Image 1 (cartoon, rainbow, N blue to C red):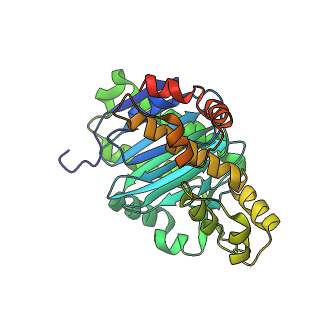
Image 2 (image 1 turned 90 degrees about the vertical axis):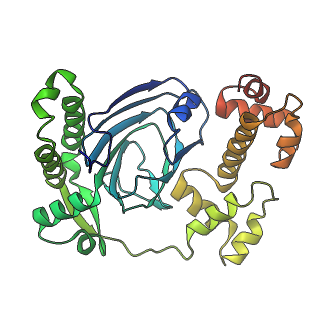
Length: 314
């Protein structure tokens, strides 16, 4: 087990009744989450670990952004069971699309609604060898011009199968039956996943501009005045086109997206505050909230508590 990538046999079965509880469980991982929708939050996280595979599913009760990086030496597969497919690296995905991240890569996922999110992280060497053995082509050859999909009519069976593997490998009473045959189990898991995969040519991008530019502009404007009109002019499109393209991609307007980013930044500062003399209004003004009643109302809508409550209970 000296070459194991993951903590072998570790079972995760966590229920979080608040977003802050889930954030605590992120410690030790290079993953960061932000709320982009108001209302109560809860999550259920279930996962198992073999030497070269981490298999997990997480239930999220509302929309959010997940960013960061997955473990080195791994390839990551992920897919959501939700009403609206997630946006991955600024590109909308299909409901049956199996997104893929390569070794040491970044995670950038906008989950548009309540969903169950499945992840399969596999040691690179094992994944590539088994992929070639199963399909007769390399992963690079497959994904250069195509995307990986799960057959739509088989999606429910795929999700049920992942859940079944997690349940089986979580059973401590059965552990004695599989602890000495992880290698064959890992190949069985990958064969199961591969058996559902079909490929489809990637569509030609038709946008006149890169929507990622708009998101980057918003992320850089947390403390600056927003000028959507000038941005649209720079991109040589109308404000309406920019508005519709962004909302079509991310499910919210640019203005709403920026507000959620600013509110998350404010909450982070309040939680990081080390003095009892912190002035909430100063932080709000820094992020362009000029009317405290409006700020407090929007903060409470998103996080379910007032800014002062966050400061008092951090």
